[in-house]
Length: 197
Image (cartoon, rainbow, N blue to C red; front, side):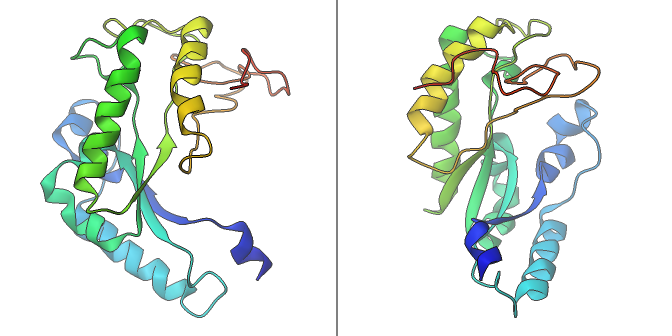
């Protein structure tokens, strides 16, 4: 069907395991869910689409890389066809996380997630570097650093795996802090930096 041809995957949930973890709770990240609840939701959505054009679309769940490497979340890995990886070296503020360290931190976390995936595909569902905002340990939010991160990470990923960059426009009318918007807070067709690879 036309719809099935337009859908590359169905994600059930986003960062629920992280929010339910000690790190997420400490960060006041909001409500999360335990692995069994997420598996139940995945099963429910699969039942809903079972007799539709979406029946053969691969299912995933999106979460932080730290959630995927936590063995207590194995039931979710077992229930999905692909793992959605959210990773932000900017926020890894207990480590050396300058823009010079970002590429290494990113790939370490991707490889750790791949190691936990049981051979399932890992999609990059969220990553980016803020164009503005506070310093996070050694990570400085700036357009120049966002451009460096794009060149080193996005350009290496595009055409290799499914990638969803965070984010085109962060918010409007108030710019959040940090802000990751590639076009700033005002929707535009002109990015803040050159996106060519």
